[in-house]
Length: 222
Length: 150
Image 1: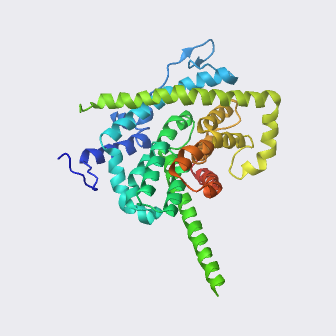
Image 2: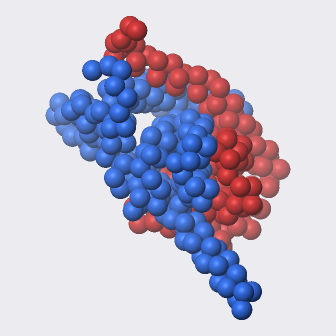
Image 3: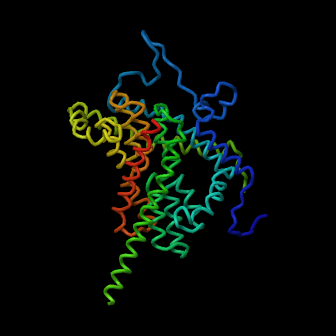
């Protein structure tokens, strides 16, 4: 089993199961279910802070009516559990091979989707978690001749918009989860769609720029 | 190599979350709240709100929301902090935040990523403005789309 260097990514059924679990868990599908199935929801397991009984109403430890840096500090403390919990879960999903499963599913559609070769699959998935890891891998892909300079530009456009999507969404973005009116998977899906659309915008731009250069070259030749 | 148990893997990730909290969230959110406090005390927040009201109205947002986008461009945590602070001040509602959330991340932290993403990957510098432009356009169109969900 070990020592065999193959291009093929090995994904077990556990990996696929972990990926499906992650999608369901963060999607909020079970958020409003009343029976035991709500155990499959991130927000439900994240729970809520206890309330402090006041003279007239109940407050969380943040209190009410604070302002400025002090209120900002108390507010950011409220965000800690969601971030710690979410990154813990994502780490487990990754450990079980969930992200590799996502990569395997993505690889065949990279060429039609972004016009970049399947070799970019790992960096593409890595970019959902870490800006730096993906950028490093992209540099490697160019240096080893697996992608061209134009493909790098297209790929970098995919990467820079909403970079480290999952990590940022579940850390910074988590601050707003309790206020948004849609399941938390909706904004995530919208972001992923726009990452791809943005990359295709520059893909068209590069094609147009290349045609223009060729055309002006031909005219100059006349 | 010792195989880590799932509990260890969870704790490793959770520790990363704690470090992000201490290293990024607290400083960024605190800064955002302090900036909003400056804008509020000086009255600039209301002025900004009025000036940008017509533009932001296109996206179904009040004028003050421009602050969320500007700070997001510099730092995602900052953008989220400003949004939260404006929510607390009653300037934004849940609907507004729903529209803003994907935009904050799509156009977020571009200055940082210039080095960390484009610089590291070695993208030609002449493309930088186009790439930033695309991120911002992504965010703007995403806000229009989110209006249908919110």
